[in-house]
Image: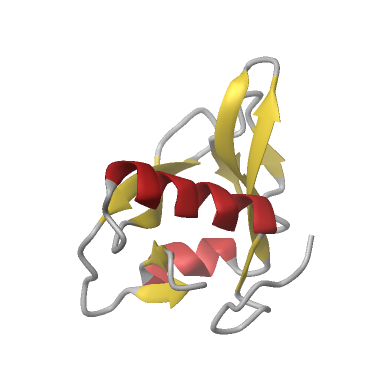
Length: 114
């Protein structure tokens, strides 16, 4: 994976596969301003969980990465150094966050602890 046009590659890395998938979704939905929003919330079986949403609106405190991923500053504090990837497996396709700050995570990969 390579660093792709992020505001600061130390903060967040967006894989080429994730960028390609976001571009495909924008094209399919005919929404060129659609962004993948990543939110870290309390909950899940490990303490925190990722919430991924599609959003055309940018909030005043949002940080933008690769002109297609939005994260609020509080969520970013849990994601510094992470990689956002898009994976295809026998179980399906999904965006996956590879978070070096997570000391443990659940089996489904949507919940983690720091």
